[in-house]
Amino acid sequence: MPDLRHAEYPGTINLDSVATMNKYFKEKTLTLIIEALTKPIEKGGLSDETAKAREIVFKGNLKEVNDFFFSNWWTDGLAIIPPTLERVEEFLKYTPLSPDQEVAILKPSSIRVTPWNIAVNGAMAGCRPEHMPVLTAAAEAIGDPIYNLEQLGSTGGWNMFFVVNGPLAKQLGIENGVGLVSRGANTVIGRAMGLIRHNLGGHRPGEVYMGTFGYILPPVFAENEELLQEIGWKPYHVNEGFDRGTSAVSVCGTAKWGYQMYPTASEPERIVQLLAYDVARAGSPNHSVGQQESPRLVFTIFITPGVARVFAENGYSREDVQEAVWKNARYTLTEVDFESYYGAHEGMRETHRDFLKKGKLPEWVIEKGKLPAWFPMVAEGEDATIPVAPGPKQLPIFVCGDPTRNKSMTFYTMYNTLVTKPIKLPKNWDELIMHLGCQGECSI
Image 1 (cartoon, rainbow, N blue to C red):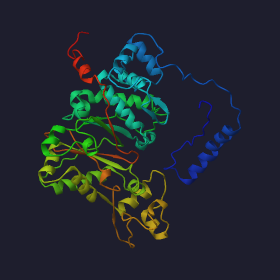
Image 2: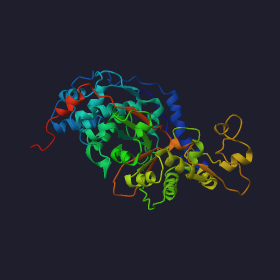
Image 3: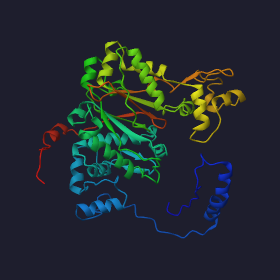
Image 4: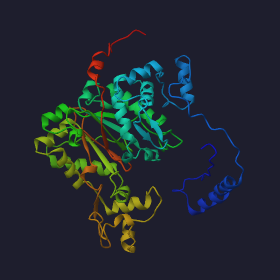
């Protein structure tokens, strides 16, 4: 909406005093509001967004193409591979879907995502054509309304990440070992999904993608399924109801690329306590109270194969670990009140104890006329704890990373549900893979 007017507040509301807010509002914001409501609108032309997908938008050399794409905000700031018609058509051979078939509607742009425009962004990112089925399933996953893609534009800098399971991960060289998100196909698939979010979802930094400190490229993982089979754990997608021979992609979100813990114990109970500590540290006491009834409060835990082996050898299933970590991952009421008062992102200065003292309980706390078990009633001076999330399902676990290291890492989101979608392959997939051609050295 090019003619839409706006009025900005020039300060930082959560840090400004009442006197400062009054001053800024009277001197700046109120004037802009009055002008926006009263000043005549000059009719302007809308930009042409109706060009056909196959239309040639630019011709030039590599530098000229990159300059043109950069000037139109069609890139992530890095150089792109020109998405020529021939290159895009090659990508489309690797999907059973028709080029114009709807895969998803991405928010907030509400653009209709098709294999054609997925292929364009995949080619730009440097993907190979055989990555197309993963990109398509991943685009479908982030377009699922339950995933809540639109909220990733928040100032908290929320990012999406992907985990690939099934035979296709190994076939395409999606890494699950040391340095996995920085190797193999992981990097270009992650970059392609960032471009899809940018160009098709409308998440342009500084416009609607408002991360205060910006974003890293979306990371891509694969589970170490050989290790999982060895220790008797099912791959994540099998736990979600998919056949072991089916390939799938899971997507969730995170506000952090966090510190990596070093579980250093042979007792699974101690490792559980350490994982629970890391989970609680990754999240927010204030958010956990506000989101207790939401499935979009997710703590994704990555553990290396060695850590998973300790659990399995002591009789723990993946679900057992989730349950145990959830029971141990808690916040004290003191932590909740401190952050609620001094660090509330919405600027509300009411604490958990305030609600209890005043009998002013928020509506989301009341469950069928009574308090849920997680909302502790405490006397003056007492402390209590609440769980970080509604239940163990909000603490999914993936096994990947350096098999020689004792590591874990927690991703945290308050906006996303973990969504898993199957990867669809064309009927001639095996033939296509056999005829990929040489992927070795070339002369330049």
